[in-house]
Length: 308
Image (tube, rainbow, N blue to C red; front, side, top):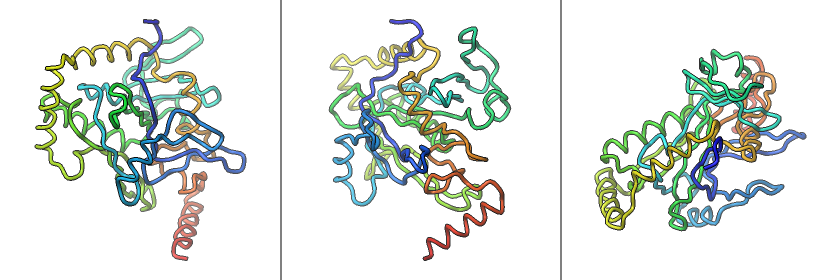
C-alpha cells in the first residue's frame, strides 16, 4: 500500500442536491430540492446523469426526494466522515483538516499536527475557507456490491442528522448497520436565518412502507446469509479503517477542484460559499445582499415575484 495515499471506497457515482452554474462569467453553486444521481464524468454542460437516476425517477411520482440505500460498513464513522476542512480555492487542494481539537495542515515544512479551534476561532480558516465537510458513501442498486455513490455536503443540518441516524440504526440493530434496508430522504425546514424560506437537508430512515422492526428483521436475515457465504464484515471494516488512515487527506487533487467549485466558492461581500442548505445565497445562486436593508429589500422583491 502506498504510504501517504488515502485508500477510499470505490465510487461509481455522485449524489447531489444542487449544481454549479455559470453566470456573468462566474461559477456559482445553485441549490435544488431533489436528488440527482450522476456519473463521475463531467462535460461542459455539467455532470452526466447515471442510468439509475432515470430508473429511480420512473419508480416515483413527482420529484426524487428519497433514495433506497444500504451501507458498506458496520461502523457509522466509516460510512460518514465529517471534519472541518479548508481547501485552497485556486488549486482545489485540501490544506487543513481538523476535528475541533487537532488538525493536519499542509505547510512549507510538510504535514503538521496543530490545534484546531474550529472555524469560528481559527485565523487560518477565516472568510469561509474552512467549514464542516462531510462525505457519505452509500450502496444503491445491485450492479456493484462494493461500489458506492458519494454524497458530499457542507451542511451542518445534513451532517448532524446523518451522524445521529447512523449511530442510532447501528445501535438498535445490534451493529448490523451494513445489512439494514434504509433510504436517504430530503427534508425541508425554515429558520429566521433563511428568512423563512425553505432550506433542504438530507436525513436517513427506514424505507417507505416499512417499519424499524421489519428493517431489523431483514438485516438479521441478510447477515445470516452473508455469514453462511463467508462474508467477513469485521475484516471489511478493518480494511477500510486502515485505508482511510493511510493518507493525510481523504480528497485527492483531481477531486479537489470540483469540491472547491461547489462547496468553497470565492466569497463575494458577506457570502461564505454554499453547502446544500446554505442561506447566504438566494435561490438563483447569486450572492446575498450585504446589509440588513439590502437583504430585506431582496426578500421583499422575492416574495413580490412569487405573488406575481
